[in-house]
Each structure stands twice: as C-alpha cells, then as structure tokens.
Image 1: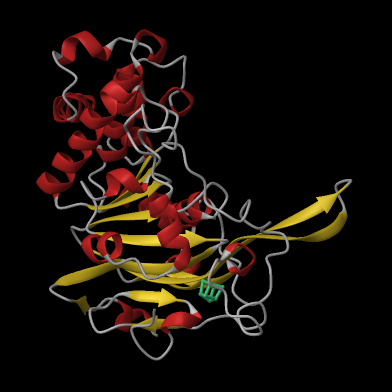
Image 2: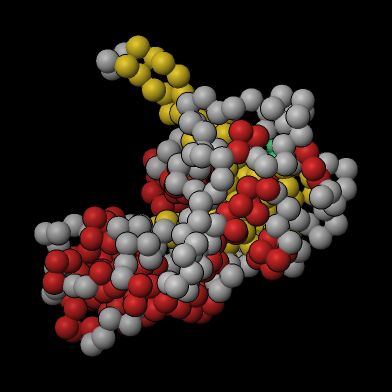
Length: 341
Ligand code: SF4
C-alpha cells in the first residue's frame, strides 16, 4: 500500500494512522556483546485507526501492547513494516519531523508520579512541551496552561499552578499528565493503562474525563489495557493482542457479545466476578503463562494453551486472518473459510 492510498476513508471516517506489517524486535545480548536472540515484542501487526474513534488494545502483560504503543509514539524504531500517520511514513521523518510528530500524538502514562518531574511545579511541567515546540510568548503559554488545567478540571487553577507532583493526589497527578498530553492539541492520544495505578474511587472519574475530552476534541484515543471489563464503557473497537500479534479485532459489541478466538473467550471468562462472596471470583486463563516472546511457539502461538486446538494443524501452521461479513477479524483455524465454531 502506498502512503497516499493509506489515507483513505474507512467507513465514514478518515484513517489517521495505519500500521502495516509492523514488527518491533529487541536484540537480547549476554555479557553486553553475545547476541542470543530477539524479543519479538510486536511481530507483524496490521490495523488502522480512524479520526475521532476510541479503541482499546487488550491482552495479558507481556503481549506486546505497550511496545506497540511506544512504537506508534516513535520511542521505538520498527524493525520491519511501517506506520503511516496523517499521510506521513514515520520511517522517513528527520529530527524536525519527529518533533512535529510527538506534538501531534499525546501520551498518558500508567504511573503518573513517575511521569512527572518531581522538581518541577505544575506550571513548569505544562510549559515544557510548549517551549520545546516554539511557543515563546509567555502570555500565550500562560493562557494555554490555564485552559489545559480547566479542561482537566483542576480547579481553581490558581491553586494548582505552583504545586509539585508530591503535593497532588494520584488522580490529580494523572489529570496533570492528561493536560500535558493535550496541551499541544494532538490528533491522537495513546493512554497506556491510565487508571491501573489509581485508587478504585478515582478510576471512573479519570475514564469519564478522558471520554469527555475525546468527544469534545474529536480525538482518536487508543487505550492500552489488560482490563476487558471496562472497555465496553469507552471503546468503539477492540484489538486483542497475544504474543506480539493482533489475533482478533471487532467492534466492542461484536467482540464482547460474540468473541470468536479461544483466547478472547478465555480472557472474557477470566474477568473477576465482583461479588466477594463468590469463591471463584478470581479466575485464571487455563493452560499456564503466555509464551516467551524470545521463542514463541510454532504454528498458532496460542496452541499450547488452547482447549480446542486442532491436532496436527494448530501446532504446525500459523492461522491466517479471516475477515467476516461484519468486519470482525480473527486469526484462528476454526474460522478460516466461514463463521467457524
Ligand atoms: Fe486454538 Fe487452533 Fe484456533 Fe489457535 S488456531 S486458537 S490453537 S483452534
């Protein structure tokens, strides 16, 4: 696909970002020089994100979703394949191009305290990206900083401008991180487990804030999360990742109501029952741990854990991706050539 062709209309909306055959591998060395292999964190993914939509990338820890996020941000260089963002191939950017790219993609980290420089107050934290991106007028910076704090509802603004991160609650810190992610008016925001380190009482508030900001600004918002139980409330589409690959993608209703891949079914079955009297409210995905990304299994990567693996096929042959009539896509031999089991 050429660059021009990738900026097409998908459904009613414009594609703002597409990943094509994207691989991000990390070389593993022993004693600093002896190469012992590659960690295949992202190992051949294709997808497109549309303007103004909210998507979720889900999967267990170590499935490659955070490495994918960091590749889209430009923090990791793809080993193979490419990312096209607003018509530009990220692999062709020079230093100035990368600076402009980072201004158009906001990043909300998992750990807000770790993401904020402890020696800077809120005013300075929010001024940094403006200064780096050439907003030299102090009055204009001040106006934008105040507007950003109002948008994330840190009010009254005057009370927060001079505070350092350790003087804020976890929820307030994450609001500052969100304000910083939005202050350059990005097109795309990537939020990597944005509420997993917050108290349960503030998680819903932060998710609501992100949803409201996404709607108000028509942002493309990509959530990285291991928590399938909450995605129904904010995502339109879900990408399920396993061992460095996307193994199923569909609209949120299709995926949660009619999951096709045995791994997605296992993930959904493992959502804890909120009833504390239910002795089985903590459930596990059967079949042990996810595979090592250093040496993923041959054939279907889920086959060692799959309860319905087809003997003689699944452990040998990699399943191709099948696209069903409603656009639901799945990589599983059970669905090749039709709706499947
Ligand atoms: Fe299970 Fe085979 Fe489908 Fe993989 S391809 S999920 S092993 S049935």
